[in-house]
Amino acid sequence: MYEPNIILFSFLIIAALAVAYTKDLIVATIIFSVYSLVMAIVWQRLSAPDLALTEAIVGTGVTTIIFIVTISKTSRREE
Amino acid sequence: MRKILISLSLLFFGLFLFRTVVELPERDKPDNPSQVYTASHYLKKGVKETGIKNIVTAISLNYRAYDTFGETILIFTALCSVLTIFKREKHKISYSMIDVSHFKSSIIVQTVLTIFLPFSVLFAFYLTLYGTNSVGGGLQGGILLGSSMIIFSIIFGSAKAMDKISYPFWVFFEGAAVFTFVLVGLAGIIFGANFLTLIIPGISASYQLLVSKVMLILLQIGFTISSMAILISIFFSMYREETQSASESHS
Amino acid sequence: MIIVLFLIGFYIVLAKPNLIKKMMGLNIIETSLFLLIVSIGSVKGGLPPIVASGKGPFVDPIPQVFVITGIVITLGTTIFALSLATKIYKRYGTLNLEKLKRAD
Image 1 (cartoon, rainbow over the protein chains, first blue to last red):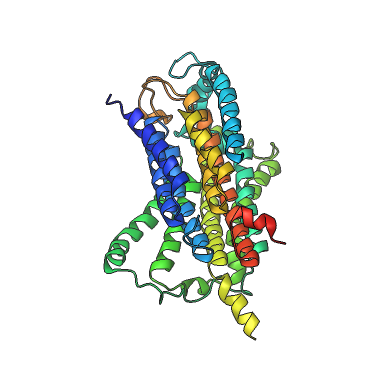
Image 2 (tube, each protein chain N blue to C red; image 1 turned 90 degrees about the vertical axis):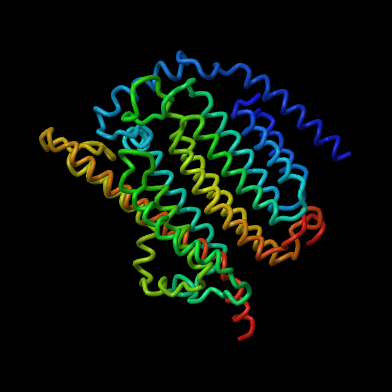
């Protein structure tokens, strides 16, 4: 089954499970920013270019920076 | 015990959601009820009534401008909530040097960013000014501008340029979106129509589209400047709060 | 499929004791709901809702307006919650919910 929607959705589900099960917070942040990027590709496949642009900018620009600033001020590597 | 409760509640929720989602109208069919009744009106008459080619921007800035007004108030409230939690240095926006002695970012990162960041700032300005003809709008341009400036000051370590802007100007930048929305809305009242109409009834019809486009560009520029200033203020408040409390406890 | 994403995010919020992980779970819940809203109005083979891009069936533009506002709302909630988490760490020294219940 080569349909791209199924591959993208399964990637999203695997990324969400990976965020749930890692114990290192920085790894979870990076996986989360990849999740935002794949979500932006899914928006483009649903013919919503405004949403793809906004999700790409917000998800990988601002959310990742804010998470990393918070992790650097609090406990870094624990669950 | 806890795990049993969690899995039971997840199953419960899942069953409810499944029953609800199955009953929604089928996607991918052209005779959805939402398509037939409202969306066809927006798609057919949108360009003629507003003069904007991007229907999403037309809806959010012309047909439903109040929602966008509420969104600007929301971003401003986020800034106010961060400022009540963290203090800001008196009458200065940021601390002059961000301490980069802990990490020395590698040559690869610095080289890539010196090529990439000017393009991203240019793209942010493009998104602001072309919001009406293609994708974008003021909001996306502002966030991109703010985040590229934050990345610049993290990697290259100096935020001195922020201190050159005097503090009252910076506070004005933060509230710029709300200001421009209120001013454009009041311009509608002054000329005799409702609050946020972008059409002035006194001028002849051939100038109306021009006036509405000018007002839209003003709105988007205000949105951009405000988003950029709010993001930068939030970042600097969160990032350097430690040193100030440490120096206060010493003295 | 969207239900599965929603339930994974919900599980992260319920079962993981760290506050930062809970914020990530909340974000996953909200993005899955935006997917649901936009996929209701989509048309098979539809064009993006910019009128200059050709004739033919367009995708419904109304849900997209609300999802743009929704993304900004998610951003605001995340920023506020993470600044509160920073203050909690400074006061109590831990971000684990089990230990926070027993302290003070």
